[in-house]
Image 1 (cartoon, helix red, strand yellow):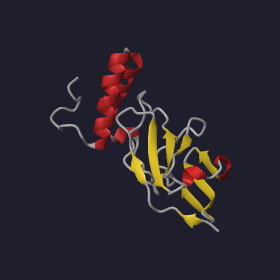
Image 2 (image 1 turned 180 degrees about the vertical axis):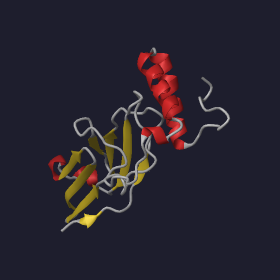
Image 3 (image 1 turned 45 degrees about the horizontal axis):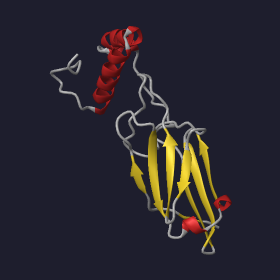
Image 4 (image 1 turned 30 degrees about the horizontal axis):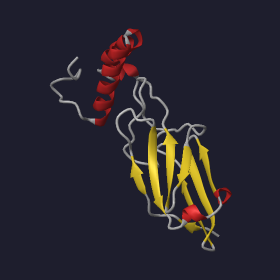
Amino acid sequence: KYVPIDKFSFDFGDYNSKFVSIYIDLPFVGTIPKDQITCDFQTSSFDLIVRNLERKSYRLVKTNLEKDIDPDKSKFIVKADKIVIKLAKIKGEYGSFDYWSKLTDEKKGVKKSGTKNKSDDPTAGLMDMMQEMYDSGDDKMKKVIGETMMKQRRGELDHDSALGGL
């Protein structure tokens, strides 16, 4: 039987940072043998188990992560009174690491019904042109387009400036 870990801090990281961090306060966790602490990383989940910490075992499981992670590059660090889980981000379609706005997304596994055809979307031609510019551009062009696309998706762009200063 595990005591669920329900209090933790979540750090999204800066733009294009490689990791999302989760901080879990557990007094004296650094005093138990390292083999008593495991974390199973999967593409869209993780499962942290701390065994025999003051005669109790603790668990933090998160499924349906907002974005996929790289299980091989993800890790956890044990400190004196806390555990830091580092979820390794995967690079998005524009060549930079995706921005996370939340840890989990229950809707991630659900396919959207009623998806539109490309021809129904008036911006599809512009998006195709931007993708072509991105694919054929140098590193600086890719960075500018990638940042602009991320801002556009998050609704941070001024609507009068659709190309974000390009």
